[in-house]
Amino acid sequence: MNRAYNIQRATTEYFDVVVIGGGITGAGIALMAARKGWKTLIIDKEDFAFGTSSRSAKMIHGGLRYLEQLQIKLVKEALHEREHLLNEYPHLVKPQPFFMPIYNSRLSKIKLGIGLSGYDYLTGESSMPKHADIGIEEIKKRFPQINTKNLLGGFIYYDAKTNDARLTNDVIQEATELGAVAVNYFELIEIKKNNSEIKSIICHDKISKFSQLIKAKIFISATGIWTDELMQSFDSSEQKKYMSPSKGIHLVVSADYFPKDCVMLFPTTNGDGRMIWCMPWDDNLNIIGTTDTDYDDDKNKLRVTEDEVNYILESVNAQLKDKKILDENILSVYAGLRPLLNDDNADKKSKDKSRDYQIWWNNENMLTISGGKLTSFLSMAEKVIEAIEEKHNIKTYNSDELRINSLIDSFKHRYGIKNATLIAKIAQDEKIATTNFTNYNYSPAEIYFFIRHQHAQKIDDILTRRTLISYQMQNYDEEVVQYIANILAKELNWTNEQKQNEMENYRQAWTLMHTWKN
Image (cartoon, rainbow, N blue to C red; front, side):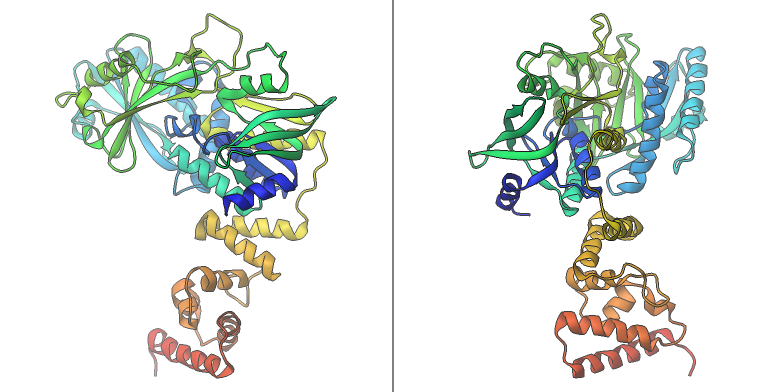
């Protein structure tokens, strides 16, 4: 959609909700609000997914190490959301085996086995296998890259990986296709309040250099590491520190150093008890990470240091048998900040802080969510929507719109969310019943979709190559052929003679291809 048009809508319409922050958390909230039928605007002062949501570990996981900290509720929620995302975004969220070798300590192996059994239990029913104990000989065969000195065995378990930035932008796209408005490079610069409510906000368009007034019923802060700054904009006397970000750095190298089908997990060499992972990524790359250190410096100037790189390289190279990774083999580096909540315990290290999230009302119509994990973004969004519904009455979908939403869900597995949304919009615009026609598992809206978006020009195009109807016809079905011909005639402006010719052409093609008895 044209950016100028989006800004025009943003500045002239009255929204049910404005989501401030276009990372994965804000994206999920915008999507859930749009699915409810709420008039929704999402804005970000930079590009969508500019910050944490493009600089993460790229993992969709329950958080095995959080079990050791007894964050069981957090892990269970994340594991269930992991399965949800595998189904919802299969083109971006993909199953990934993880290999963890065990060195020196048999007690560590026993404890890890118990932990992985608990991980499997909390997962419940899953499309991915349970963990497996593998012996030294199998490890040598499958992972010839690693040093096997003092190796006692290891485990394979499963989580998932993603492209975090693409996932965020796909979610925002889905929201806009449901009617939400999205504007990036649109910075909140002023909050206008009247007693206990926000009446409007002023945003500066960093592209056109103009400032604009935005009005809404509810304002939602999903600004992650920038939560404290927004809280101070809301109330200049605010002294509380809500966030305690932690820094994680990552190295990008060629995938040729590691197995391309499995994440390798290695213990750090400095005795801090952490693990370094080496994850196969897209375009023959491998991401190695990560550090986990407290960070209270300038968020706009996040740099990777030589000490941080050495910390990772030393741990990885200690476990590689022959081919070591040198400085000159590093293709690039990146650093991100985790939006961890401040628990006011100055002695607690970043790695021990909770990855949970909190939702709270700042006043009558401004809500904040912060903390949490990439994996749980949809669950977090649902909690935000529930909190809003408990406090405010916002119109949701009517029965016709609910049928459209149901159609999206029904056809996601066949067409992907983008095209399923297009089909739903056609159904809405054409006022087409969403039920199937005759005895075939296709809706009328799909036929229009094939013509308008997938280049169908003839009856055979639709019945043989874009559906399986030709293959389902045990006997020639004159009624369905007539039905498809009528839609094609309407969409392509056929004359009646053209329509009759096309129907006869299809009969001949069907007879030639699909019959075998004289």
